[in-house]
Image (cartoon, rainbow, N blue to C red; front, side, top):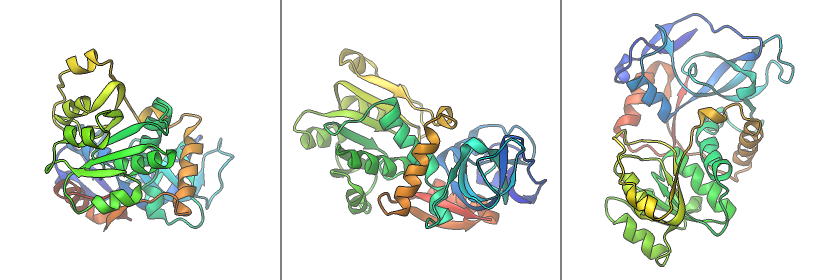
Amino acid sequence: MKAAVYDTFGPPEVLRYETVDDPVCQPDGVVIRVEAIAVEGGDLFARNTISPPSSDHVGGYAAAGAIIQLGSNVHDWSVGDRVATIAVGGSHAELRAVPARTCFRVPDGLDMARAAAVPVPFLTAHHALFRVIRLRPEDTLVVQGAAGSVGLAAIQLAAGKGSTVLAIQSGTKRMDYLRALGATDVMDRHAQDTAEFVRQSTEGRMASVVLETVGGATLDTSIAVTRPFGQILLIGNASQAAMRPDLWPAMTNNISLLGVSLRASFAAPSTRGDIEDMLRQVERGKLAVALDRTFSLQEAAAAHRYIEENSVLGRVILRP
């Protein structure tokens, strides 16, 4: 099969388009023929900072396609079933072997590009808001990095719950889109002071929950906009800057900082139901998936470079 592989961590140019061995189907797994690959933030982080476990390593978390082979222990799937998949590695290829438990049925009316882009960001947001905590209609949620895929998912899921959503993002051109998704108010963090924006929007009550995806110095701001006994959900560090917040304000105001790991929930009993429900909502138009641009798998390095150098709205897709 053809795949985008790399032998050492580094910039996008370490990716090469090569012919490699087909993946082996495990007894508890399946092999899919990949139709669409969603390039995740974790894909870029791993390629840029983590030594690959083997030569000709195939990275990538998320891909969708049709099952072409079943493991001997798999009885709840059939060859030809359309699935979205998540796993640690293996998405940037024509074929992918994954555990059957990390496959999610794609509705017939949903295209594979949007299906591939659902599991990672929507599961991350859902897990944070409804499993790690129990977001309530009376909550005010601040979303840092609101134009990223997790932020876009969180806005929709929280608005669907009836919560007030304040979206913090860079630039002004996407504000109307974020409002259309359900954000109560939106600000450009380069043009306004975040703490003052939240103070005015909440009439001084501040946020009960903050979804933190940016990291770095933004974490100090997240603490500053959180009310006493509020919660900060640490989703990621898109800035890739050191996070050394002043924790004294958090301690004196009884603010909880909660780490959220998607990997820990891959095989949780609730995961399949959560993702398949959200895939159905996307098919029905209840949830929106933003797709920025499509590249061929052969252009994987260019796709990674494009994401790193641009303010991408939603997901970039690779097509084998």
